[in-house]
Image (cartoon, rainbow, N blue to C red; front, side):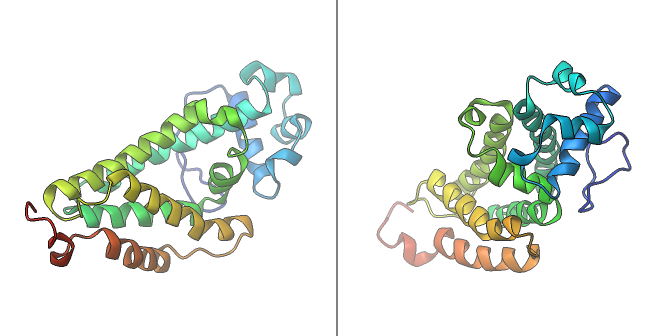
Length: 220
């Protein structure tokens, strides 16, 4: 979404370098810039074109409509972050340590890239076609990464096996989003370190395997 490798967002997060025409890059950047201080519904294609310094017709050359543009911006973000999450886990031993890293990284992205956070947590959720879109497929890819870590922990005896890994994953995602949503909506500070400690203390207390959780299961 950025035009060069050294560019970054308002919140200091470097974006990947895509192989797109300059006009398309300007349009995506214009929407992104407008979303820093506006909600998506209030932004018009005319404003996007004016901010990008292009004609409104050029928007429709690259995108079906304004919503398609939003989805493409989100897709670029998610492809970048999905790759980063996979890299973040390399070299980390222990499923709970991996989960802690994923949780911290997830919160840190919401804290440092508020435009992405607003798009993902607020803007696209009300559109029914979002749930059949390419960005949603990428969200599910990240979800599978976390599920894989949980299942690894169950197999290794680090995480309880009497609770469904999918339920654990949903509990983690629900806690993450609810803990960060107010900060995103009202542009308040989000502390990745403090929030990670609080959430991990709460969540891991419920999913970590302990001797007493297996007392009723002689096969453990």
